[in-house]
Each structure stands twice: as structure tokens, then as C-alpha cells.
Image 1 (cartoon, rainbow, N blue to C red):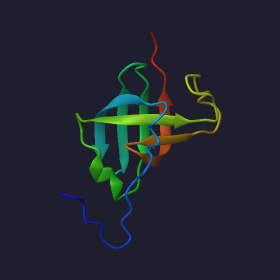
Image 2: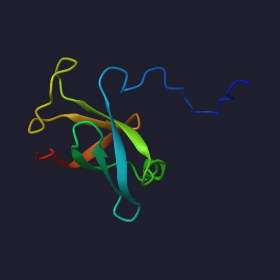
Image 3: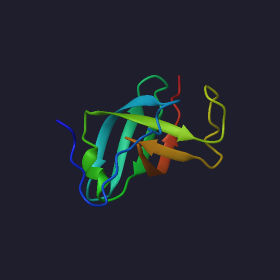
Length: 104
């Protein structure tokens, strides 16, 4: 059965994660503070971000979400996290609060 759209509802035709993304485990989602903490699976980067108040309910501890940094680089090149960039989590633009690269 097809999906019924209501007024002002749009179907996403393209994902922000189509080209370059990494899966991340959701460590915490604090509704009171409005912050979500994740740790990426491959690069082990720890990220704290602030989604919109409405969308924070879509992030649940223990779940996995795709993470994409958009920083004007070519696909496959590493982002310079000291420069301005956009951060997408679960196909939504979110506000990065803290990004900590893994120490080996």
C-alpha cells in the first residue's frame, strides 16, 4: 500500500548520506539539555550535537545513526574539523557542539 501524504508533508528524494557517511552509535540523548552524543563506528570520533527540539526524540541510546560531515571536500577526503562545516545526523542538519577525534 502506498504512503498517504498530509498537507505540508514532503518525501525526501535524496539523502545527505548518499555519498559519504559513517555509522555512529548513539551514546546518549538528553531531552532536557537538547544534546545527543554519538561515537562513530570506524573512525571512533566522539560527537556531541544539538538537533532541533522536535527531532531529538528520533535519537535513542543504543541505536545507530548515519553521520555526514559536509566541509567542501572531495568524496573520500578527510574533513578539517577546525574549519566551518555542516553536520548531518539521521538526514537532518544538526548543530555540532563538540567533536573529539579518537586518540590511538
